[in-house]
Amino acid sequence: MRLILNLRIAPDSMVEEDTPGAEAAPPSGDAGRGELRLVDVPLNTRVELVAIDLPEQDLEQLFERGVLPGSSLRTVRRSPSGDPIVSIDGTLLALRREMADRIRVRLSHDQD
Image (cartoon, rainbow, N blue to C red; front, side):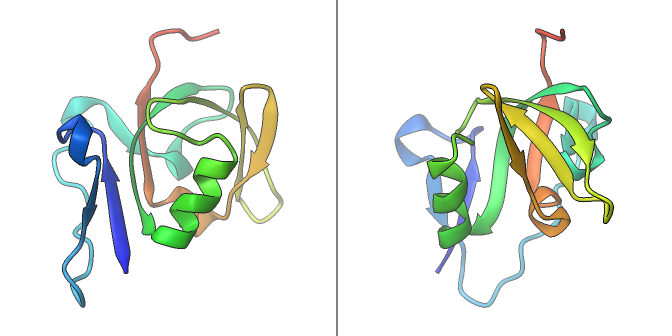
């Protein structure tokens, strides 16, 4: 089962099921809305989570670690292999580059 989390849909249907066998289409037109992939966020930039396109078990792991819809993240460093390390509520979380590539964010208004 594959789930897509997208905050632009109605709040009572935040998780919708993708059609089996269909590949997720890359986001189109998101740059015009100020969205970017978490993997592309410059260091020390605060962003807000907009959408996650990951399998259910990966979503659950992120939710358990505080990566929730609307949460504020800040990229603090990169691993030697280029994987982003983000701070969320004072906790550091290392993400695989492949996972960060499927997380869409937008620049936060409360830059520090």
